[in-house]
Image (cartoon, rainbow, N blue to C red; front, top):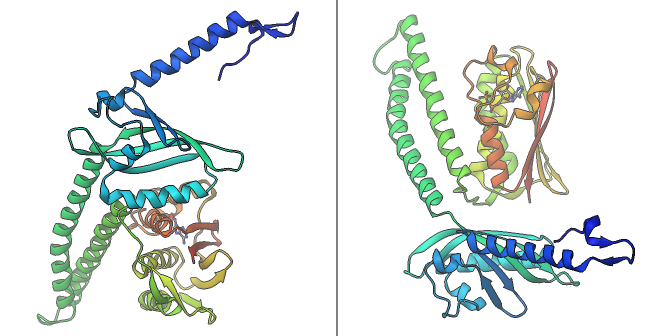
Amino acid sequence: MVSLSGRQYDKSNGRLNSPVYERQLRETLERYELIFRATNDVLYELDLIAGTVVWNEALYTQYGYSKDSDVEKLEWWAEHIHPDDALKLEHKLSDWFEGKSDTWQAEYRFRKADGRYIFIRDRGMVQRGSDGSPMRIIGSFLDITQQKQLDRAKDEFISLVSHQLRTPLTVIRMYSEMLTNGLFGELNSSQDEHVRQITEASVRLIQLVGDILNISRAEMGHIAPDPKPVNANLALQTQIQEILPLATKQGKVVRFEPDTKIGTIMLDRTIFDQIVQNLLTNALRYTKPNHGYIEIKFSQSKDGYLLTVSDNGIGIPKAAQDRIFDRFYRADNTVNIQEHGTGLGLYMVKLMTETLGGKIWFESKLNKGSLFYVLFPE
Ligand code: ADP
């Protein structure tokens, strides 16, 4: 867009000072043309009405195509998308066409002239007609093949390391539990105490390795929710049973009010359990012995199902509230009470909630308590 400054506009006759205006317009066009030619990213202008595409030089210099092929036809583009990505992309495009959004983004594999597929991030802006239907898309292809390869390598590394860690850790936990249970003979009280510490530490490590694995999978978008019919109240009760022995030992009260109107609902049970387990563990951790009170509710709301976990614990200081979902973040008032936290729990809960298309938020007052909300879409 060319801006009209005072110098381009002749005040005496109210007309545009055309030579200046034309020069500026020409310069702007030249600038755009240079950008169009100079970049290594493929840029395109797609006319959806005519079914034609104009590409910049990068399609020829970077992707190896020649100008005499049918590159300017929309079908040519479609034919060069990897068959395994084409259908998904088609669904995405038609959803997007029906929507109101002016921006478009997708990742898929695209074939180069030498037959190799590369991963591209396709981003564009749309121009719509007066009835809202898309007419023209101007966008770019960014080659993200290297980033994808790195992601895969990171994923494989993390899976391998976690597996290699988990197996020996499980052995340590198993034998220490057998020792505690007297399977290898009676332990004196000091031996018993030490073996219990070994068990606790190995349980914490197994949990940590599991969290790291889940986080890296979720960060890379490798967790596909798998909703199945679940009795949500029963699922919650099972999770509560898990923390009840420790809560009772610490003199804390756990209350659950099942909403009997909610029966079987569609949920990814593994993800649901991870979210609930983390919030319950925090509520338990951050309430004081003998005064702790934890309340869990699950109800239907107009946007989905709402889980709330409240406690009357130490609360979250105002200054820490913006960072509570950050990776490895722990508030100052926590560290003295609970030395063993990692600051990964809430980060993972948020990732998992978003993977399901849900939302998480909280209210908290220092030394009064916290209330966490998780909205699960229907
Ligand atoms: P951590 O392993 O430290 O519990 P989380 O990611 O689960 O890690 O939580 C991050 C931080 O958020 C905690 O260290 C604590 O400061 C705060 N927090 C989380 N839940 C509560 C709660 N129920 N009450 C008070 N503080 C909480």
